[in-house]
Structure formats: structure tokens, C-alpha cells
Image 1 (cartoon, rainbow, N blue to C red):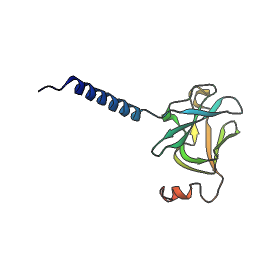
Image 2: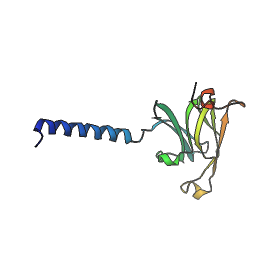
Image 3: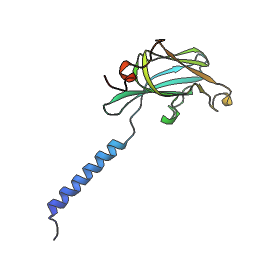
Image 4: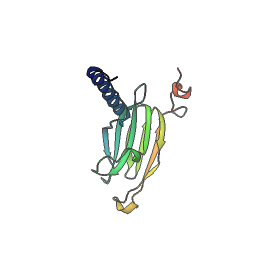
Length: 149
């Protein structure tokens, strides 16, 4: 017994729709550069990007360092990855020191130094410092409770 052509077309359309939905779900989130800060000596840029990720959706922030004017490095090169960020502030306190301030944040990744062959053959080293505004808690009460209100 063979299926009718209309049934075969309907099944093919359903399979195609499912494959498209699966492909859309598996694509990486899009990064949007929201700010770029050049070091006082003009050699390095600190780049902040935002992506919407997860279920329910939340904004994740990534911070990258790159030689001045260079493209944003790939996602695996992020010096900082955080979400639930309130009042993110990035500032160069001096040419080789970058401060990352925030009122609250859930930080998944942080690296406290950066260097690159393209900037003085690895001899130019940037120190990154976290600077939460509170001496008490930098996680929200909800994050401290494991995400429960």
C-alpha cells in the first residue's frame, strides 16, 4: 500500500519545518557590540557585547580585549562573561589597568590579565580588575537563593 501524494507532501513539509526549527534552536546567539573603550595610550580596546540567551531569555554580557581598531575576537576569547548585570561600568584607570564595575552580577568567567602578540609581542600586559560597588554582596538575593524568589 502506498501513501497518497498529498500525505507524502504533508509529511515532507512537516519534516522540513521541524528541521528548520531545530536548526534555529541550535544557532549561536548573536552578539551586539554595545560599547568600545580605547586605552589611554591608544593601544588596546575593551569591547563590551551583549547577547540574549537562555530560557527564559536573559541578557549576557561579554567583555573582550583586542588591539586598537581590531575586530571583536571570537566568543571563546571573552575575558568576562556575566548575566543579571546591574550598572556595568568599564573604565581604564591607567593604560594597562582596566576596571570592571557593577552593582550586581552573576559572573561565569573572568580572566584578570590579557596580552597579545600584536601588541608589543606579548610584552604589553593588561590587568583586569573586578570592582563591585558593594562590600557585602555582588549577587542579587535571587541569585544567592539559586534563582528562586
